[in-house]
Amino acid sequence: MEDTPKLYNDPILSKKRKGSIDDPYQLYNETQVIYNGKAQLTEVPNREMRIEVSGDGKLWKEIEDGELQDDYFKVDYLNGVVFFNASNEGKSLQFKYSGEGAYYFPGSRIWTKRDGNEVTETLDSLTERARKATEESEKATEKSKEITKWTRSATSDYENVVENTRKIYLPMVYTYKDLLDTYPNPQIGWTVTIRETGIEYRWDGFDWVNISISDKFDGYNIVSSYVEPYNIRTVWLRTNTPPSKKRVKPSIDAPETDLIWIRKE
Image (cartoon, rainbow, N blue to C red; front, top):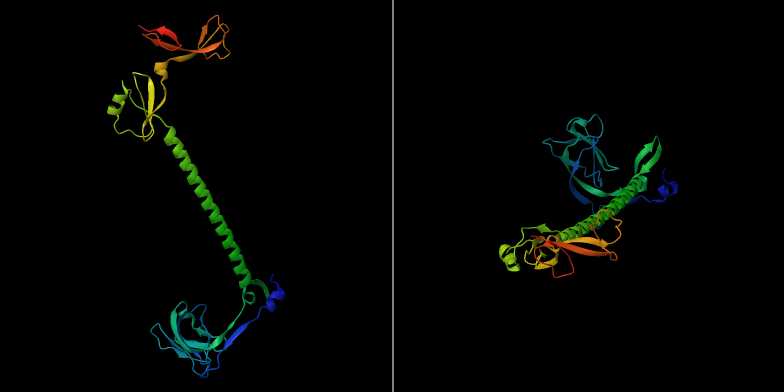
């Protein structure tokens, strides 16, 4: 229910012209649409100068009493309302008149819902609800923009990680010079092993970067100890020495580093 004190404290404003040289009437030539059998004018028309209606290919005639025919109209000169026959509903017509002014009602005095003679909603409260709904919508939109920005940033970071870490293995070459000759136009992530040294090189977008020694050439990890290791998946070499990790490499030539060598014929 509306706030009664506010309802009666809001003033109704009126703008009334004198029709004199210093304060003449305002000439109007405007288009209005007939809705619910009537057209609301911008201002209250002067009764003496009357209203001229045109449009829809008819010769419109004003009447003060009697039934409204298809080409008749009545004017409420107190409130600036023109009435028409129901057959003219939705038509746009031209209205020419001299405006004396208008009455302006506050939103709290215009009802939009009622329960019998009790006003339950006014234009003022409806507008306030719409304003709050708009604010909430704008907040939700801003939040959505923030989430979208964060998502794009996270996606960009992920793409950068993938771009900087992925490996696309290509057939190995014998020397580093062969690497340059075989892959003259590399793409980010291409990874190639040099057979001569066993080194893996990865193209990072600017250069071939040494990233590791390939297990295929460098051998495998084993545990050398007298006691069996807890990890049953570990390769175990039983020795009379304290536990230590070593590498084993099958090859024809003995390795130069401290590796356990399995001679390969």
